[in-house]
Image 1 (cartoon, rainbow, N blue to C red):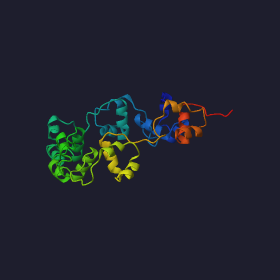
Image 2: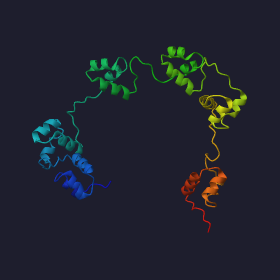
Image 3: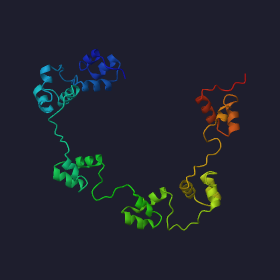
Image 4: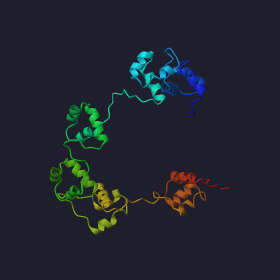
Amino acid sequence: MKPWTNAEEKLLGTASDAEIARRLKRSEIGVAVRRTRLGIPSPNEKYRLWSKSEDRLLGRYPDEEVARRLKRSVLSVRHRRLNLGIANPHSAVRSWTEKEDALLGTMSDAEVAARIGRTKCGVSLRREKLKIPVFGHESRYWTTEQDALLGKLPDIEVALIVNRAVKAVQLRRSRKGIRSPTYKGRRWTEREDRLLGTMLDTDLASKLNRTVQSITSRRNSKGITRFLPPGRGPWKKSEDALLGRFSDREVARRLGRTHEAVNYRRRQLGIPAFSFH
């Protein structure tokens, strides 16, 4: 986006934003935003420049009072003040004190709001900003002691002990690759474990007569990466060396990759296509 010049800024407010945009070859939104930031009223209002005596009122009185005295819009006054870097000491927003912050999370947000004379929404936003948990609720983070219970007791019992939903316990246990103590399925053998990652999870599930979810969960718990069929892994230097020496279709056939993948890789490396001449 090109910077604004003094000559361009002098045109703002002298005609409609659409007309100024046409003259300056800028977007109408861009013109409106720049005009507003400079505190220049809409061309529909009677246009007049800000005087030094008017500028001296900014920040000394509330924006609404300045707007009334100068017969300008509050929006125009506010943007002019901000553009000049003048703070508003009359803002109705008050800072939070240490005493108020100390109450957050010790009772419901509604109770805190009633005690300190703030809105419930304002209290909730402040509490969340300080990362203080809601009153009456346990922290959502799992502790080492809580994780140690997973798989040793039924999920419903763990849920009662740690004061969490049963589904939350099941999800946590599943993500850590821990089998439910009530699971009645057959145990994994060393032979089955050795097959993990040697083929697609879907193929191994069919081979071992297990579910795909069971195969994936077992593989993840063992820290074994998923199987990548030939032609789907990272490119090797020896494979790159074939690009451009043969047609893309021939390279694809030799490497077991798709024609599209070979064509994309060759263009990515800036290698010209194979020519028969």
